[in-house]
Every structure is written in C-alpha cells, then in structure tokens.
Image 1 (cartoon, rainbow, N blue to C red):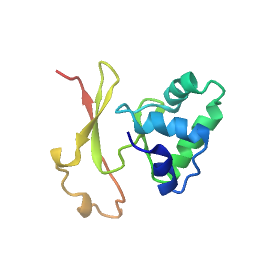
Image 2 (cartoon, rainbow, N blue to C red):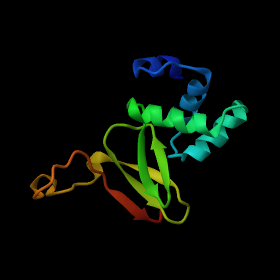
Image 3 (tube, rainbow, N blue to C red):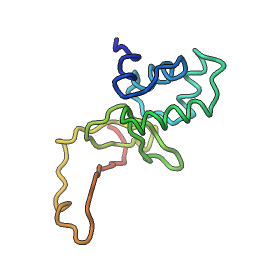
Length: 130
C-alpha cells in the first residue's frame, strides 16, 4: 500500500485527516469518480466530512498535479489519479470509463494545425464493450 501521507507531502500538500481520506479513495480506485462519488465513499469512513471539503480537496489535488480532471461524462467532471498521458473509452451501456494506453492510438496532424498551439490532448472513445 502506498504511503498516502508521503505522496501528499511530495506534492506540497499538508496531509490533514480529510485530505488523507480523500487521497486514499481517489488514488486507490481504477474508477474515474465524480466529486459527489468521492464524497459519498469518503463519508462512509469520515462521516463529518463536508461536500465542500471534498470539492476543495480535489481541486487542490488537481492544482498540485496529483490527479487530473476531465469532462468525460455529460454534466460532470471526473477525477483521474493516472496523470501520465492516456486516452479514455466511455462505455455507453454502463457509463464506466476505462483507460486506453497512449500508444494504443495514433493521432496525426496535431503539430500541423494552423493558428493553434496544442498544449495537451486526448482521445475519448465512446461505444459499448463486447
């Protein structure tokens, strides 16, 4: 098991009880949870944690580069502890989001786009798993 407190410190984050609880869930899941899902899961262990604390903590984690935030689902942002480049597949039957290795896809012409400087990109595939 990863020492979550040490990971938080490495990212310049003071490891409070609430931050540790949020980090343990977010860094320990393969899912891509929304803030409300994180709140519900963490609240099971830490009943007094507020929704605002979870939202603020997740935003701090994004700011410090511990997690990334994506708009992969309609009307909700999801949080992903996998910060290295990768793509996503959204299963339209279940809503589940799956990581797709960066090297599994090839995107051509990004550097050739006129009038834009691309800082980051990813491919989001949608469909159904077989």
